[in-house]
Image 1 (cartoon, helix red, strand yellow):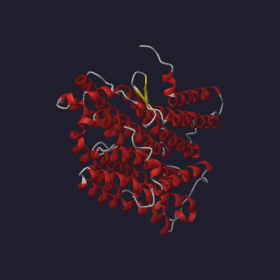
Image 2: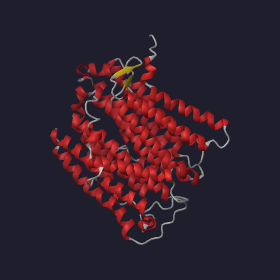
Image 3: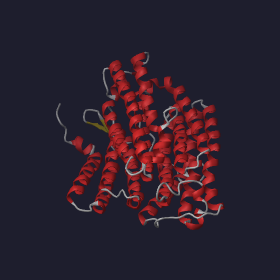
Image 4: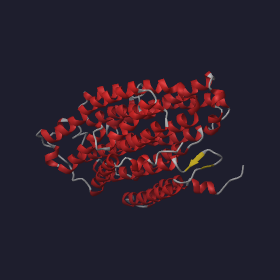
Length: 474
């Protein structure tokens, strides 16, 4: 097998982020108080990787013997991951200093997680996909426990690690069974054999196990129980990153495997995805109503939103796939914004993270409250925000494919979700309280919120700007 030097150009965005992550580690051990340099260097590296990914978007090719896809779908998600990572860095700058975890390793772990996400979105081989998932997951295990002095953070890291290792077993065994049935781990070759594998019990058991592993990564019912505890115990900025970029990466991998490789036999999975979607929407929304901690409420909300996105998988049409991709982008901006506001309000041992503690927030911090209101309206699916069109495209795809009942369940679940999202706004604007902020929000943090809010509004008013980028990628 001859090495093709152009393959390196095809994975240039991944290489740039990898070199940036490794350089951060070197800066940490060679420069005293390297954190400010590391922050600036990381941002520059990610901007360079983003430019490279944008330039590769028109390309439609493969690299490394059809193990890596180039351009199109991969570049779309690469740019999304990079944007969400930069926003995470912006909201983290002040937070990690205030929480006493101002270490360069924090940035390095996020960058290594980003490399894993980019590998997932580029994978055309199950082994490459597995490497990307594990690189992302291992980084998340460490980041979840980054508040080492807090028991809740240690607990979240341990739970995430143990349950994540269990889910990894499903992934590996599923890959092994698929390899045993098809004789290959390359997704394009599996796609060519799908007619022959259609009646293979071994193959579909492997697919089911792979689906279980991905269901854990996207936090869909019944593989969701890790999410509330991990989201609550992890540093708030880490939770923001996991729940947006991490979930986007998991759905990217899910789309690659199910819609690309198994598309010829995906009708066998229609009902499975419909069941997962209904269970996630119902459980996530109903339990979110009773939560008093905003991080836990957003965790259960995340489970419900995974259910909405799985409706697109049940539809399994081009409209459904584009709807899922649009939803992933919209959810990324509105959720990272919501957690960004929480990270600026939080102080001490999980203070300012409950509904009661948010009473009167608008009188003390009107700008942050306005940003939070925008994100809550969007998450609830109220127009003219991005969340409305995210759900609209998903529901339209379901109706077009004969899943009208599933769209109706989604609409009813959304109505339930409106209650706990609007509740946040009511507590901020219509109750009196004394919300204490330990430090004034940083300019970078506020800039991240404004960027997120503008993106949510722009995608709600002009949804075609993102939607047109999602068609024809499969």
